[in-house]
Image 1 (cartoon, rainbow, N blue to C red):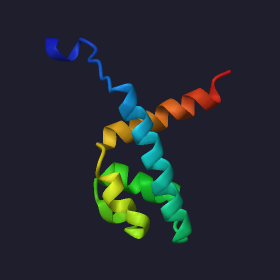
Image 2: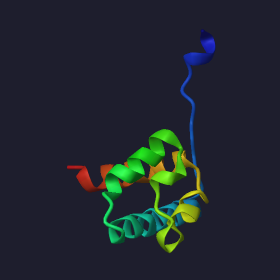
Image 3: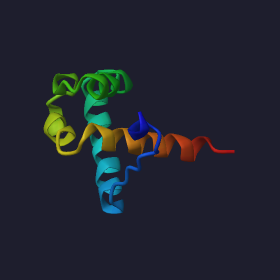
Length: 86
């Protein structure tokens, strides 16, 4: 039980943040161009790990697999909090 009492820390490199941000925007645009709901499709991918939620249009499926899903989630949370802080 003691192993679950301490907080673990997760950190990604700043250059990885920029790469992840760019990737999200490219994948979002590709999904939008194909007429998909980008938010739903990206959420499906993040929850399941199944890359078929992401279109292959503009190489988006290959792009999204270049970074780990946890890195995408971290960037999404960072952007959400930054835009909603008061």
